[in-house]
Each structure stands twice: as C-alpha cells, then as structure tokens.
Amino acid sequence: MGWLIRCESAAARRYQRRAAISMLFYLLTLWRCVELSKHTHLTGWGLYALALLPAIPVLVTLGAMGRYLQEETDEYLRVQMVRSLLGGTAALLVVIVVSDFLQTLAHVGAYPPFTLFLVFMVVFGLTQCVQKLMNRVKDDE
Amino acid sequence: MNNRLKVLRAELNWSQAYLAEKLEVSRQSVNAIETGKYDPSLPLAFKIAKLFGKRIEEIFQESE
Image (tube, rainbow over all chains, first blue to last red; front, top):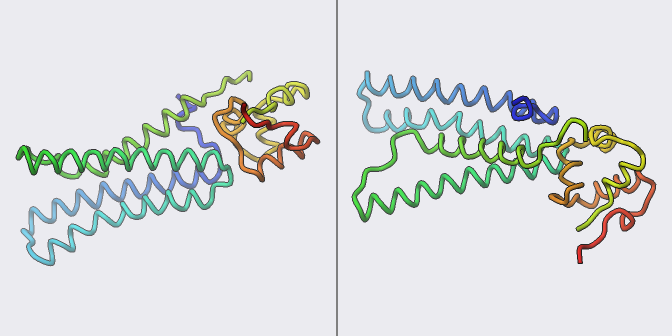
C-alpha cells in the first residue's frame, strides 16, 4: 500500500501536509459551528456568518491544490492533479444535478447535510488512486 | 506519438528510477512516457533528447 501514499516530489509532500491540516480544520470548524448553532439558536446574519466559517478551510484546501499546481515541476504529476480535480468536480455536479431534479420533480429529500465536500474529496482521492494504480511500476523495471 | 525511450534506456542499462533522477521528474512520468500514456511537453522532450545525445525526432515519432 506504500505506493498509494508515497509522495513523488517535494511539492507533493508540502501539498499533503497543507491539505491534511486544512481538512482537519474543516472538520473541527464544522463540528464547532454546528454545536454553537444548536446551543445559541442563532438566526439572521449571525447564522449566515456562522455558516460561512466552515467554508474558509474548504477554500484553504482548494488553495493548497492550486499552490501545488504552481509548485510542482513534474508536468505529468500536474496532469494527474488536474484529472483528479475534474473527477471530483464531475461527481459533485452530478450529485447536485440529480438531487435538484429529484427534489423539484419527485419531491424526494435532498442529500444528507455536509456531504457535498465529502463527495468531492472522496472522488478526488479515488481518481488519484486509480491513476496511481494504472501507472504502477514494478521495482525491477 | 511513439517513442524509443525504453529501448534507449535499455541500451544504457539504466533503470526508470535512474532516468527519472537524471530528468528531474518522477518515475511515474518516465513510465507514462515509455508506455505511451503521456506525451511530454516540448521542453521535457528536448531534455530527454539532450540526455541521450540525439535529436527529438530520433526518439519521438508521430503515430501513423
């Protein structure tokens, strides 16, 4: 399994560290904001401001991806990152379109809360894994 | 695009890892170029050609 998490470059190592920290901040911020909202029963602008807080680490995570694309000198690794971003974005848009359609025309409930970013990140990660699997090299080659 | 990278590397008895180190790219990149999954940019193609002491067209050929 080492090949799955092994970093191919210094830029990739920096990206993984930044992304891990921002994801951890996302989970902590989301958890704290939900708890705060339940206990304080905020409404109006206060609630809007609270809702914006978990979006900050999301932007930081995407910023880390953008910075990786700037710092990575290996063009093939850059292509892999772009493909993964496309995979994640495609999954996200499919979920939104299908969900909106069902909500509007079939009056079926929406997706569970806080799942969209998770969907993006899971498919983004899976696309990375599939690419690494497809391009796996034997040690004796 | 076809290329003779694997043949040239084998002639010099270089591993993919060694070639990757020489080109300052990842081993995945070398593997992807050799297997035709990825066509390198012009700067990288020049770098490969310079390393093997050949012209670009001696290494990379247009697919028929």
